[in-house]
Image 1 (cartoon, rainbow, N blue to C red):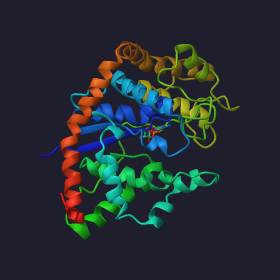
Image 2 (image 1 turned 180 degrees about the vertical axis):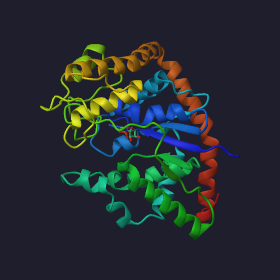
Image 3 (image 1 turned 90 degrees about the horizontal axis):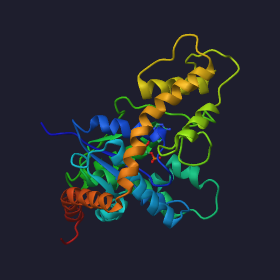
Length: 321
Ligand code: AMP
């Protein structure tokens, strides 16, 4: 039996947060033993919107270090920086030759992010094709996806199928999977929105010091109902706290809890997860050369397959190899 191949990506546009940990990183850790997973820092995707070069570079190294600190085992799961595997961009162009302009322009994220007008980077339009290249390059058969990425995964499937039909079997057609034990974490200050990398004060970054974590949870928006129960419609803030508690500790809140007590329980549960990550991160960041070596080893591990995939694609398209 062949092992399932999975790809999980993180975009270096901000610090990794509790949503990334519970929604993507923990499922990746859980799958390490029974899948061939790749963890990718998608630095090229971070260039599709206005960006600060020094910040992207710093965040790329920081995210790689946090992935290691959280328990990604680089001997099992290569950690790669997208731009360091040049086949991503080569396959991106080749796939642009089977993708339609209309297909890219229809993407909801493109429409939302370009709606403000102003200078819209062409790469914002074409980035779903790069994402398809990320997946098809590594013969990925399962992509853990949240709802907001469904459309992009569908495009990858469409392009793979179209290419295979037109030019001969070249790509594995990937499937989207809802990862085991993934939680969707909402913003603590604005519980109707997903916790994200930018904007709100309701985000817990994985490297936030304990006092910041404590304060962010203490200030979490709740409601006037004063009952601790799951009710996503009427009590989104309290529901989010209950879900975070369950995801972090596997526990439900005790009976008759006040919101204050619930928040203290959530703080303890989050701290129990973050304390070892912070400590390991501090050790690892004392030796950035070591992290760089791990990234280089990741590139070396994935490149032979990537080079072979690009070669197959070039041949199928009629390019001289
Ligand atoms: P990003 O770096 O923002 O592209 O996100 C990396 C991964 O984290 C993706 O798999 C997202 O689905 C996941 N993720 C991001 N924010 C959240 C959240 N608030 N709750 C759960 N998962 C999330």
